[in-house]
Length: 236
Ligand SMILES: C[S@@+](CC[C@H](N)C(=O)[O-])C[C@H]1O[C@@H](n2cnc3c(N)ncnc32)[C@H](O)[C@@H]1O
Image (cartoon, rainbow, N blue to C red):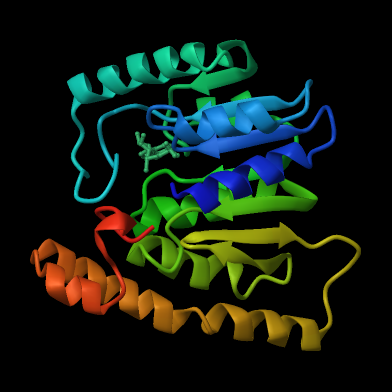
């Protein structure tokens, strides 16, 4: 998560009305959950869904590892406590497609932040099943859009063609979507929306190339693609 992305999470949470519900899918050790909890008005319900199975933790970390997962749970709890927000956040230690996760949030969601498994199947399921729970006028933030191949393909398949979603822009790879309210948008509005989404594809292609370059440790080539040491280990 970059600073700009943290500011975006903060602004989206701060703008919520009291009594709203935030769901975060993929909390890792609590960084984004803390931002959301510090910003959300009193009375906001904040539900963090993360199985902490040690799987899909980040780039190249796909396989489960129970010990790593337990360490993540402990670090998540400790970090929230250190930030003074432990009592504001409910952790559901389950995969986002588990019945326990859905049961934890029976009502509508005003802010959904998706940053769980980035593979195509789980990403598509998150955008479909959790996206459907976002209230009209609510916000969906999706990390690693136009950066992760799985997340981007799921976005193009699920969000782009759906008139229920309008693309509101991005901070790096943090894409922002709004669930439309007040009837379906006009064809002109949809066409403009689609053009803005498809306009991100050159940046997506650059990120895929950049990741290949970084994995091959070709740092000078990465710099040619605009990714220097200050940009961190991965394009976010
Ligand atoms: C990139 S990290 C999340 C980072 C976090 N949002 C932050 O900013 O600190 C991805 C997280 O997704 C979790 N995860 C993996 N598969 C998941 C799934 N099916 N449902 C929910 N969370 C999942 C992993 O356990 C990991 O903690």
